[in-house]
Image (cartoon, rainbow, N blue to C red; front, side):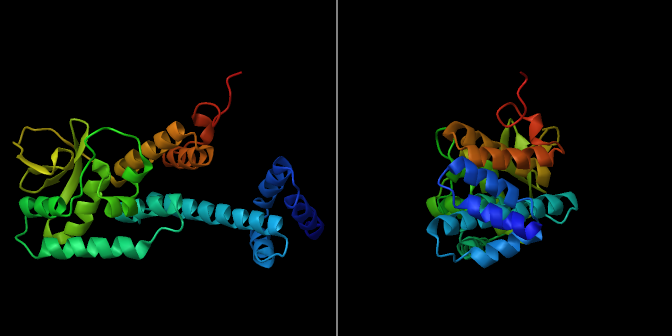
Length: 266
């Protein structure tokens, strides 16, 4: 019975009507391991229409699995902040150059290790590398993807904190915190480093209140901004993708979001 169903779905995938092909793809994604076998079998189909849609199916399945792995790792406590940041980058762009990210972080790590350990030296390395928060508040996807930040130099404060924290490692242990609504780094000597203010250093007194960010806090902040970027850009595919991640992290379904992602009140 499944063979007949798969054969029928393959025929529908070749339909010129995009709506019919989309419905067939939706059914395909419910087949489980049989979908993998069919995709592998027809990935190099001679029919260009079928080949294109099989590749689309493959991309969707890979993205779904990475999404599930991301959520499971966060739930069981095995996901570090850095792994989560890189995973979000890969979830957005599966062709991301991971080796480039690793090389850039290694270069920063060596520069930090070469100087005196401390907030001042870390801030200097980040400034010398010209990693900065843009002067104007803008919603741009490039500010929330670590590969593009390392390539272009500008990024959100949350991502710049994560980059500095990862590069510094044990040379300068620091916690990501929120102070006055801005992401900063705070070390054991109560020195605050603010990427939004050009990596300014501030010595906090014991009474100064800041909010230490958990891994989930930081990842939610990044995902929320990516969701807003998708909303402004009108990218329904990314809106659905990041919306599902946000709601899953809060143990909800997409129905928790407003229409058209959630259910209409009407």
